[in-house]
Amino acid sequence: MELQINGIKRITQAAPETRLLFVLRDELDLTGTKYGCGEGQCGACTVLVDGKATRSCQTPISSIAGQNITTIEGLEKNGRLHPVQEAYLKVDVFQCGYCASGMVLSTVALLKNNPQPSEEQIIDFMNGNVCRCGTYPRIIKAIQEAAA
Ligand code: FES
Image (cartoon, rainbow, N blue to C red; front, side):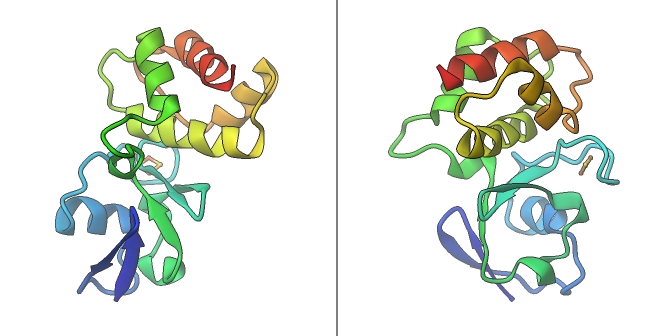
């Protein structure tokens, strides 16, 4: 099966029901996408599918044929980090960093549809992304920074 990942066609031999997370990490070596709960609850595995924040641990590859998948490795362009990545670094959000790629990609999806979200809208949208270090105030600040 053919997948479109970060603008590149990738071929996988995985069975159609295989979850995208495992194809990314185990087959394509795109390990920026993290395995957290494996049950759709934590957001660590978030990628973009046609720009929409998507739990890759819950996504069979058969359901995303022909769609554009963006992982954290695909955000950088021409050696420059994405503005959302820059904002997270500027605010010095992360401690352990395990939630980072999912948080950043969810933020990209949020700002694409709502470039100037209120704090309430940020909290509402990011509610499904868990940070075990509890850096939520800095995450909100970074999103506001990226939106500015
Ligand atoms: Fe997918 Fe937790 S690993 S939501």
